[in-house]
Each structure stands twice: as structure tokens, then as C-alpha cells.
Image (cartoon, rainbow, N blue to C red; front, side, top):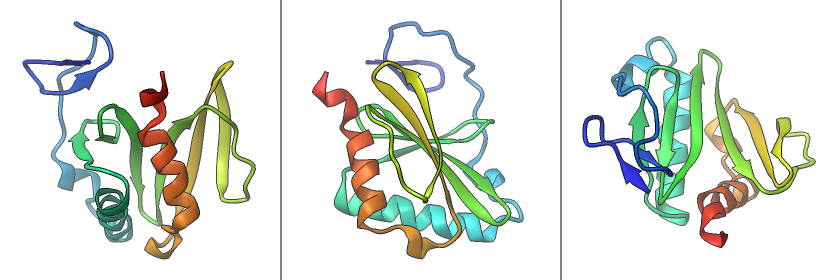
Length: 136
């Protein structure tokens, strides 16, 4: 793992090309109160049941890091879209997309419309993503 000395973001590869631009976290939630409530609940549950999550706010989205970048959050007016990787597809009506990234990796996209949707099933998937690279 490599941490950029300029922007403090964490990457797998030393010297990985990236933009050091950051965006204040609150700007992601302008006029998106529901998304903020869901995000705060999600981070609280991750920190309580899975492990410490560092929040990195960049122009496109919000990233959560444990030992690795394990989840992206995209606040919308009526929901919070989350994206994370697993090394398997997920067949659930909750999943908006399960897109193969490689032969062994899938991007899982889920829309959360309420903090009540942060349940054991979702947290199990997020936990799997949080520890995904530990198995390598």
C-alpha cells in the first residue's frame, strides 16, 4: 500500500497516477439530507461491526478505506448509492447491478433508500468487501 504524501489518499501501487483533488464531505450532501442520514448510519454500523473506516471525499464520490478502498458512496437526492467489490456475483433483488470486472471480481451496486436497509445481509456483503484483499 502507498499513501500519497500530497493528498494522503491510499493506493495499492506506489506512485499510482491519480488526482490529488479533494472535495469537502458536506458538499456531497448539499440538499441531500436523506443520503446524509443513510451515509452516517452506514459508517456507524461499519465502524461498530466490521472495522474502522476512513472517509476520503473526492470530487466524484466518497470512498471508505479500511486497509484498502472497500466502498464508494454516491449521494443522491432520494437515496445513497453504494458500490463495492466482491469476488462473486450477488443474486439479490436489492442489487441494482452485479458487473464482472475480471474473472474473479464483481462490482456490486446497491441503492439505499432508508437507513433501515442497513441490515445483517448488507453488512455481511460490506464486510466481505472490507476483507476481500486480505485473502490475497
